[in-house]
Length: 382
Image (spheres, rainbow, N blue to C red):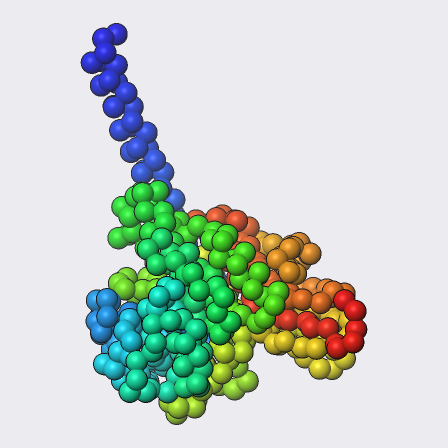
């Protein structure tokens, strides 16, 4: 066979394999359906999306248009985080909009990278360009800070010596698709027909994010956030990544009260993260008990060991639960209701992996709790 014929055959073979590959993904996309189950919505559990952009920075929709999409996606609240050092136009658009609680923050650019400032009192002064100083100002204005897309290829976070962040983004959808741009080409082709399938396939396990989160938790409290980081395709993204916020009363109709309820819970780690696009995730619970006293997710407690930890995952799907202590798995089970006697100090958190057939890889946790921090009493050995 001549070289020219061999080359043609090789190119033709590549085309055949490519179209088979595309066809396979198209078939899987068409048959994909999110796992759901019949459940009355928990009264004290609110679902929302964090980190999105509007026309006031680099998004393509107005807050009103985005709120409509959030309502269609079944969300109770959204948190808009437009770029800008005190983006006043953006910050002035908050409240109850089209039936959804719209909260505001800012994605702030500093020398060390990007962070999100939430719940701060609006000031006439801009934030400093140095992370430590900027985050301290946010704190002084009664707000809190979250490290944004820490290992983003374009703007990685380098300010790890800063102790002020209360949160870190452990999954960021914008970073996810950018890091797998070429590998995701088949999923772009099926996106118009099955956007949730495509987005789920674009998520890879951000091992460095989780490892850094666990590392920081050894020394202080810091909470993990799933961030949609939406600039377009808002409704599709709202159906993929959600925060499930646990509160002690229904969401008030009064805006200042509703805002305080959500931000208080987020600043205390009283929420869990879910890749909702794969399966309905309402109803998960993780807590500890000392006698009749309950230790909530996100809480740091000085205790005398042992402490009983409880996990409730009442889902009708095949799942695997991992209890993680100081970054290491200490319990792995397929049970859905269980307790664990914690005999060591440190942070404990839960990951749940979906074992059903799904475009979401099994190595990626479907649900991620925030930790319970058990600290030793003074004068006692570990």
